[in-house]
Image (cartoon, rainbow, N blue to C red; front, side, top):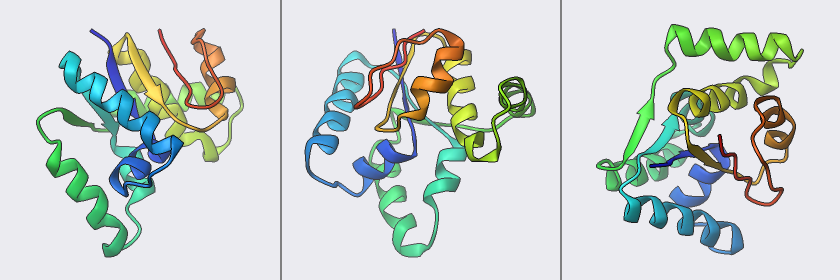
Length: 142
């Protein structure tokens, strides 16, 4: 059963309920994961990108609490950090890609995972793993 990985943009869109095409697409993937009883994964590094102040934290925390039965926070273990760091080193990616590398290593470790995002860089980084990518709302499938 495929797992769903939320990146920073997708988490922010869902938590802040920013209605529009992006929100509807995120919600569609989230509802499908709920229906399939798939895990929804959020790497801890994504939370770091989202936590900025009490005002911003509240929307994220409410969303995560509301969906705590299906959303799992994936901690950055030493091994995950090492794998992500090696990915960055191998492809000469600077620190701007740290969270993205952790997201991709989460995908690689969970197998059959799907990440939803509006960010183009997954097409570039994901290609290293042979993931197939679309531009608007990237679907990275192993």
